[in-house]
Image (tube, rainbow, N blue to C red; front, top):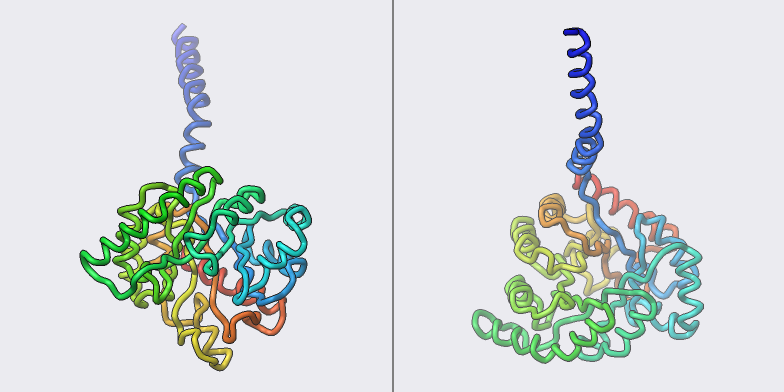
Length: 307
């Protein structure tokens, strides 16, 4: 009888463990789930190369989507217009990728209405542009100017909401939104989740702590992170080795603290490995194969930073 009782108890205990096992395994797997970057490929890295040649490269770089730019940096937005939306969508489907972003500095934040409708038709949810307005402001003047910019943007944010698009403002040089403080005010004052930030370390002091702290402060208001550093700049022609110092893992900026901060905020937006060549409109290297190889090298560096 004792033997039978023990057997039943053992069975009951075993059954309880067996029932709990799937949830325990799931919890363990969840805890082990590693933070990953969500890569997007910027079309101007290939200059004015055709979309037919660029799109097969997207997955080779570890990206799942393309960010298309107009002239002068690239001409892929113009190529889309020339071939038509149907043919472009077919190319995306052929290569099993998506249109993740349309970058439009030319149109500016107040000229995106038609572009947002195009984005909606093509299943694109992000647009990047600059934050136009007075520059060189600080303190209360800066806060007031950022608030005024947002107020002027409200009708466009309504279109963004209807279109399922997020307008991401890059901290671009010689713009209202160009400094860490201007980004903080934009994040604090934004009235809608359809207004976000495209964070470009290139345009900020090359200080890892400052940049990491800024990432933590901005949190989920970041929709685009450019893996891009100043290096030796991009405004004058330099030997190629010096020009490439803008790329992750080549210049002095240590991306490890930045990526740690992105992991801390559980960043889900796009990451675009990026640089500007001189002159604009040319590929960053002399062949499509070499451009892709350089982006892959940069991605390997970023992945090592995440370990």
